Length: 240
Length: 219
Image (tube, rainbow over the protein chains, first blue to last red):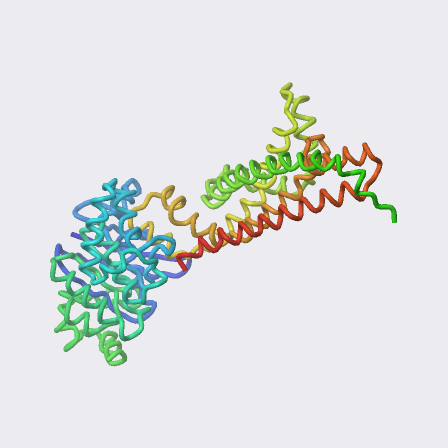
């Protein structure tokens, strides 16, 4: 589904990604973990071209998205993204946050968009919040709305960039539950996270990134019980 | 002290008639100046080479020369250059639009740049095209940031509109000038004109407060 071939990314003199290749299959859930500044968020952001790779190739369903002539907007419509800080549109109600893109980007009728939006809000447990503004929601509720906002576009892939890192501890669980539910529906997901237990439980594969390189790519059990690289061992000792 | 308001009473309706000219110039220029300023701000942000450079040069010229000179220039030089006999109102609105557009564009640009970068990223990630993103997501938030500055600009424009009296457009100031000439008294007509401006500014301030409160609904 997503094929990443030897991508690098530099910001000026700083080389953040130093040649990463991997593949994510349809329906697969991949957790990307590693120390701060290792490049895991940058890797994720390359997948929907919020960052354009300096070199290398990314293909989604065989379509090369790093081709300069690629239709970036059309590609992004197939890829949902959830951010650490939610980034809901503060001047719109929760319902409008969900219906805006399907109506204005996909040309969906208002009634249909609202019906879908309400279904999704119910699915993330926020049916009663449709008409409030985001500022009235807790962090966990905001993040669930943000997930619903991505899902309403019917993406084929969902990217999560540290979705629980900005949340108070008691709100982490409600967001992880929604993500777990989503994983069970067969959604293809790439998740940058610091929640090791969640990664172990939900993901099919762990990508361990350190200093811009992909050091390990193994099933979660194997990774957490018996990491191959010295860096992964050190990292796991620190976080657990 | 030599004050005699009895003499001026018959002329008060005439001074009040000037409100129409003042309001006309101010309101049209504010609306057009806002639209023009938004366009300039979007050009400046877009980093589209030559247009971007032009917008910056434009702003620099209109901020770097006196407004009264711009007004005189537009009113007297337009017929000379184009042969078109520009009316006083046209010249006034054109000048004030071009001038306030330059000022407002900088304010709007600042407001847009102050919108959280995450808003741009969220919009991009949803596949929202640039134009829609700017109009529906970024601009509304940017303008909310700068609402107080926009009110200041409108108040400044209302007061500066008195300059149109120099090209003979019948506004509050010009009508007060005329009354002065008719009765040879200064204090009375100008104290009335000053009061009118002050009351209008106060009303504007009040309207702005109501609008601002409405826009802060989502906080």
